Amino acid sequence: MAHDDVLEHVEGIVKESDLLLVDMNLFQAGRRRVLRVLVDKVGRVGLDECARLSRTIANAIETLDLINGAYTLEVSSPGIGRQLSTENDWIRCAGRKLEVKTESEEFVSILANYSEGLLTFEDGRVTDAGSVLAAREVI
Image (tube, rainbow, N blue to C red):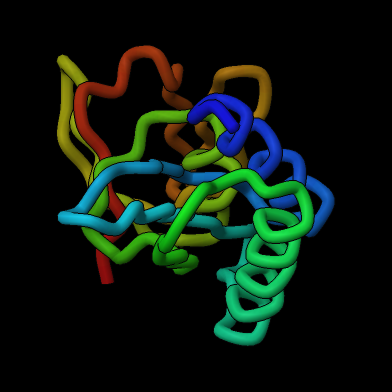
């Protein structure tokens, strides 16, 4: 099956699992193909959820014959320090401490909410997500 078909099926499985797709990539590593899936959710995704999702994706790949030959499936959550930029990033990071840089300022604050393109922080700041030049989760 085509690369896009694999990604489309996996994206649907992630949504059905009530998780947020952070990143997904299907690539060649030597003789083996690798499907890397990064997922998260508000509050953080656990190892049990990653394992359950991995089994569900593997079963779908086998049943639908989505990937021919040997492949490695990696399902995990993104680490702290990863750059944030997508709507799913903002949704999943609610309640987490972020380091944010805009054209006018740099600050560290806990993201309280994301709604309609606006980031609301616990310290009272409200920032348009489109104005963020760089952001990452910090400890």
